Picture 1: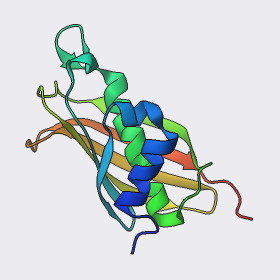
Picture 2 (picture 1 turned 45 degrees about the horizontal axis):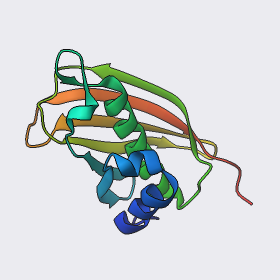
Picture 3 (picture 1 turned 180 degrees about the vertical axis):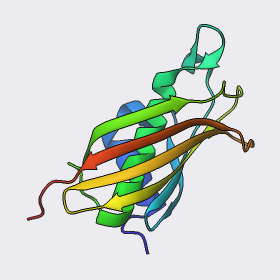
Picture 4 (picture 1 turned 90 degrees about the vertical axis):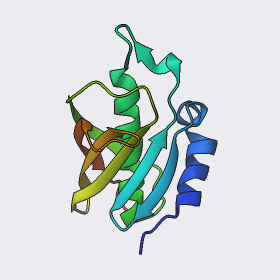
Length: 139
């Protein structure tokens, strides 16, 4: 059973991550060590050439990793990104983006995750991300 609900995560986004909230980022599913997030398509997210910008996809992947780590450790606000690696694989369709993440390894101080990004309604992978979060000492 996950340590955080979809509703609780979306409340964190709304109240403490205003930049993500303003872009419409929302968790749609959270499991034990998994999460799915969505960001609605907006022309403001495009870069020259008419494709979704890399920073938009990186932000969605990072937010998904945050949901994944909180799903296993609970609400620990100072769990932070220490590394993010993203491979852009194909041009996203002009529609909502979906990120699906999972925990690869959870230790006492570090969590390693993978996130795949898709155009909503497509099985074609748009980007593949791996990342590490630092977990502060408890107590």
